[in-house]
Length: 218
Image (cartoon, rainbow, N blue to C red):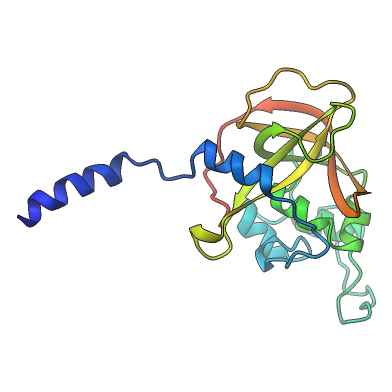
């Protein structure tokens, strides 16, 4: 009897996709508006933290000795509150660049960077690339030149999963793309206050169809 019961349960589990459905993610994305300046920053997405970058990107850390001038920030005086000033030299030391010279930063780290004054000052205008799903921007898109890039983020369990997104801005109307498709997004970072919320914006240079990353955001 036990075997008879286990067979359909096992078959159903094996056939079930180990992910949220596109419809679920789309519904959550449309309803979610998060202010990065008020959101609690998970340790593993703190771009100031070398180990956090290594874990979330699953890539080796850059060598401070070869990452450019100022790689060693030991002499940097600490800020009020005990945190050292975050500089471009830190970014060079903590974050790997692509062969094209773009900082390879997860979308969730780009989102949370908007909540840190110094990190967003350093990232502003820097070339970055990230991988995310793309949907129409229904948040703030008066000129029809934006889409939104997002990733699902689970803090502790599936019940609290939520989409984290940034605006992606084109110079003109976006070209055709697959809604909910995965893309590598390349551009420069900008940060603007919109509707009272500090908004991370990727000024797009290139959008290349990609596959879902193996590393899950959890």
